[in-house]
Length: 249
Image 1 (cartoon, rainbow, N blue to C red):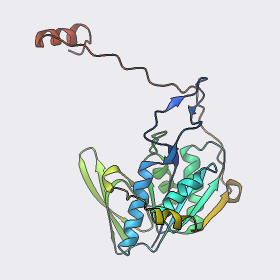
Image 2 (tube, one colour; image 1 turned 180 degrees about the vertical axis):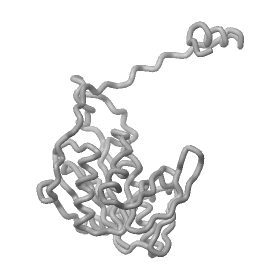
Image 3 (cartoon, rainbow, N blue to C red; image 1 turned 30 degrees about the vertical axis):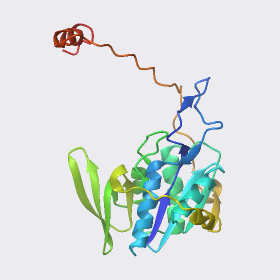
């Protein structure tokens, strides 16, 4: 079984994100970038399936600027066999990403696609579902456990009421949740070996996909500073403040 894993280059989760002075976008100048944490989990799950003998080849895919090559090299160091970079400087909305990934899937013909459930930059949680719909494939979203069976996958999903297990006939798509696994630490020899693994380049024009934006960003602003709390002397004062000031009682 061949697996394709999509990875996104985002602002590192340890970095405090700031908006540009003109409110047009997020400021990423001279900011540390890294692989989206949910996509790290996706790569790790694909590698574990390969180690279990269920997956024969792992192809990592990233869409975006030249810096995405670094993200793909990280995926290769984690255990992916080869990478595909669809290079573009244009901003990509979830629908455009799903269309581009669909075109890559049609070229690569994998039996399994694994993506993070969402990216920590826009938190859209849309790409996986859109891609499954465009492909006409079954999907297992918010996966906390994946088991490969004969020609199918058993996916345990995180839902509001607890857990749900679904069976997906291959080919299928899975989006990963935090509790699925813990990505491995990458060793130096693997980083060096990743530099020799193949990384193919594609353009949006080659794939014949319309990535024109459908949304208009009006303004990007940082959230308002949280107000300091106050101490109360007793429960009666707390109730009074909740009733008269907060008006929640």
